[in-house]
Image: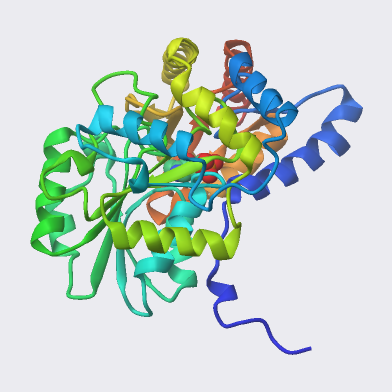
Length: 400
Ligand SMILES: Cc1ncc(COP(=O)(O)O)c(C=O)c1O
């Protein structure tokens, strides 16, 4: 058989998905027969049901036969609503023409890197970070320049290191705030400095703002708001996290750069033709239907965050900073894994098998995650309490 393309071995994956498959098998074949269950504290998706008004909008779309192709960049009503929503928090006057709606937010990463990166071009990517940025860059022959997000800086980007990593081949900086996996919300001051660097060096910015509504302290500031940035920035966002709509698969890219919207649209046309029509009507209801349920969900995440922080502090050897946004907590377990003489991957595997709790090793998000485990606090308070008690008692038994 003739070989696969040379690109394919460079394509990574999102291990958070493959870990689930392995864990479900373990739960089904090993735990269930013993009357036990696995507690999932790894998953990056809201545990809440999608709000009823949104589901009803999807049902109405089906009943009204909104079941055909839509324009490639999305239905005009949704593009207009997104433009208004992004304008309101960036103070940039976005129009519907500046919005490309896609099948989930993830395609914006794929399309944007496709649009910009030739073999050998460099992309500056914080590390640890959402793994798809690096995977797509390397798949396309680009070079990932990792920028370590350090715990002592509250996982904010280090400006000196950013400046030092720029070369004539640098084309794109990827930012994500609030950040997955650290929960960091980048300081406005730092974002303004990053913008200066981007302008001085004529760089593009992908600003992944998928968690912008999930803020517990501080405030979200978009780099697109800085003078001169809206033409060189593509904002990525969508309904998945804010409205508990991961399975609807609706996201968008927003930019004042016309050539970029045209290119994103052309890539989308070659890929999916258009986003799902029914889901777009549901997303329209989400964006225009008021923020009462979102506020309730965010307030519940904060309660869960505080509970998790308290329980982590009770486990000897675990250290963490307070995440300001998103729904993730990175916990430094270096002291524990050194004592045990194991890697963080083996540690997480053991926690699954012996404490029956699923968490992710920080290395899923890059090399600089090697001291950390990532918890997600979307799960119920009951699950968090039970899971942490199981981890605590397992660690007490092996670290005597
Ligand atoms: C930082 C980040 N960006 C983008 C996405 C993708 O969002 P979507 O599910 O809408 O494709 C995720 C999902 O986990 C994420 O964590």
